[in-house]
Image (cartoon, rainbow over all chains, first blue to last red; front, top):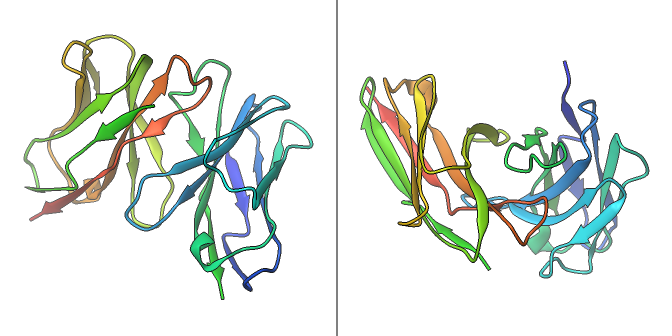
Length: 113
Length: 111
């Protein structure tokens, strides 16, 4: 089945220690998104790629970076995680012109100790 | 910018009908989406309104009124498994390929 896969599902990192979260998709969608979601809150868009074009949200901290080496894979790098970065990180995809219907991966729960 | 407001919590009994409202402010948008998210799970797309009026998908229907800056999700024949958070989301005409999510409504279905 076509899907969005995120690894790992749970990640524990230390304060200030860089961490990378990964996302892959078999839907062949042009657009990939990274969201941060904290408990009882809405998903907050960090950035998205339209093909290779990177689009950063104005309020996304510089501490968050992303890479999309090919259509299928996208990575979220947190350079120096703080306690406030503990959250669920969701990857999503959509096809061109269909941003209203996004397909989400299961998420990575990040804990910062 | 855009903002979308939803009631924080709604409670209903199994078998009933419930309506989850969404009011929004935007300078321009192309449609209103609805997503369901169970605790610990990922958001799942439910419905989309590009035009005013009602869209029906099985037990779920969604409504949009652009003149009132208002939409709602209607869930019929409620089941226990419908207990989840529900988010409305706008795609803005000036925002490219992205959505802004509403504040979310936690639906609790009771026996």
